[in-house]
Image 1 (cartoon, helix red, strand yellow):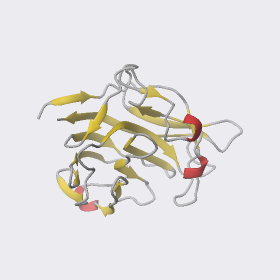
Image 2: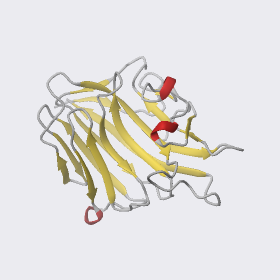
Image 3: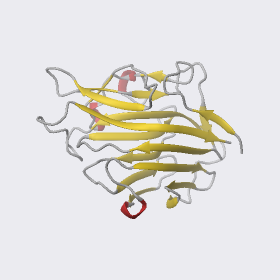
Image 4: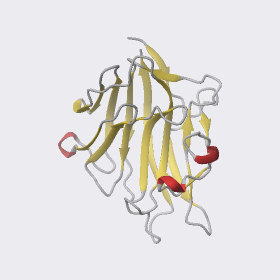
Length: 216
């Protein structure tokens, strides 16, 4: 395999900032998905994806980067392996994710995380079904931890790993002709399923994607 994509989160060729067809009307808000996001349109050259409180509102300015609509328009395809090193957030309400999207679906979640469930990684295949809420405390999953993630987008099975430990194999896969854009973002929970940031808490949330690459 060879590396066909290596993320530069400050690149306007690789990424579009602050717009995604995964959000109603391309954004900036997505209340229906229980998010307090207001997409900011900022790039993240240091790999730090952040959210800051909007004055006079319960919404937060949030970072979202996607390859959809970018000049390079990179897509992952069946058989690709995505690798990422991330540092998880610590503050309540932070909702980081790496995922895929195209044409209203084709979503595979490389990971989602909520600090109120400190040892839990969420992974899912919305293409053909399959998900796991994985308690990975023994593998180093905790608020503020740096974690090496790997996801193999197989035709018959999507396989997830964290710090070299198998997380889940769905035995469903994405099919032979699947392809989708990448999204890397930080959302803010609205309190429906996970606590929203406390009113007297920090005014800035963040997580770091130190590296992200795709091998083919």
